[in-house]
Length: 331
Ligand SMILES: Cc1cc2nc3c(=O)[nH]c(=O)nc-3n(C[C@H](O)[C@H](O)[C@H](O)COP(=O)(O)OP(=O)(O)OC[C@H]3O[C@@H](n4cnc5c(N)ncnc54)[C@H](O)[C@@H]3O)c2cc1C
Image (cartoon, rainbow, N blue to C red; front, side, top):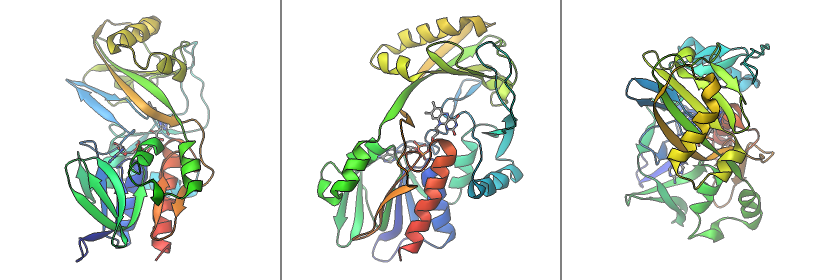
């Protein structure tokens, strides 16, 4: 598993789709790879959460497929029952379905199915955040919150860029100036997600997704109609970036009240419970044109994720695949 000198071939920080796909490829090609994840589960923004009987996809809602390399993975996931087609379009603010020819895929049963499938048999440390990156006797060294020290010949960072950059706070000299300039310009929109349990059906039209129904709400989904929450009516509401920025520091109960108030015309049943999750780094405002930012010397160091090459799940996946290719080719 680990090299005799205690170092891995590659360390991957972050167990979202970018990091897991990179690690999957590296492991399949015989590279001893360790993934470090600060949360207690895998998936990052591909997130599914259970509250009592209700189940919510509260981060990414679905994904589309354009690139043929990603298409091959999506085909495999479909064959394995890890994903299924959700719809060919959603309703817009007037409640009418806007069908098109583009399939939207969802995890089966929820969005975390994909990361869970990718993670099986990988070496992953969960629930321990990386806190610093340094160089140690010719290899990369990553220190964690719990005091663990991991070393590797190559390092791939897949957390949202500001979080990856923060790991170099005590060792800024490890990043060339050009990299610091590119990375520090990458920003993300925040997004509030309200997770509401209803006493009965929501009233959202099939297939259970509604785009931009009000000024403050970017998206609403009925997880019961979607097939994620078979035993309870569970609604996900995503606030738009302007609303989220404006109320970022506000009391979460207030945020829930405002958003549920705006959602009222689509709620046929009373809200029994509501929880608010804040995605500080929801989606990148713009993306770097390359699939990753790589520094070859003195040993491979890569920044990857949905801020590189293309946003969303497909962009993140392609970034992870490209990062793994680079590490494999850098020997
Ligand atoms: C509300 C919302 C809705 C979205 N809707 C869609 C959609 O419908 N379709 C779509 O295609 N995309 C959507 N996206 C975007 C999509 O979720 C992302 O593009 C994709 O999941 C990014 O994957 P990633 O692996 O690059 O990053 P992440 O999923 O963010 O993974 C990074 C991981 O790094 C971990 N991490 C961070 N810091 C550390 C540290 N110090 N140590 C260890 N681990 C660390 C994090 O916990 C996380 O697990 C949405 C995102 C949000 C938030």
